Image (tube, rainbow, N blue to C red; front, side, top):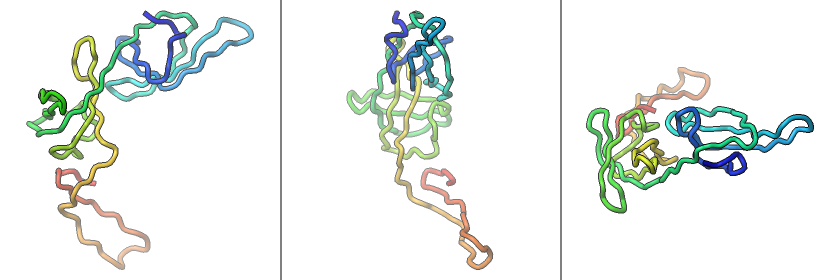
Length: 161
């Protein structure tokens, strides 16, 4: 158990039955009344950001999260299979846990966050930039518009951008 004095950016805590990461915190000592800590918490599973105020000295459970590098192998329906790059252990994630599954191509490196107590995957981070080949686009019709035209492009993974 830790107190609000141990708060740091990036610290993972258990709050309301979920895992949250402290994105931002500020210790406030008003002239009248008790001190408190204003925080912005990000849910590990959903990504939702929640502002919350803790009174100073409150006991909080600190949770450990371990991030490991995995290589994307293939998808089997709604399950995506990954291989650990260090010990070649394979694991799978549901489609709902991956932020943009249509942009993953085979062999791509991702980072999967694991809760160390249960050793279960809780989140997946895909790379910020992905190089994909455009397979098909509609032909652009010049002269029909006064401004730039935007058209959909089908990528090699099946994603439409």
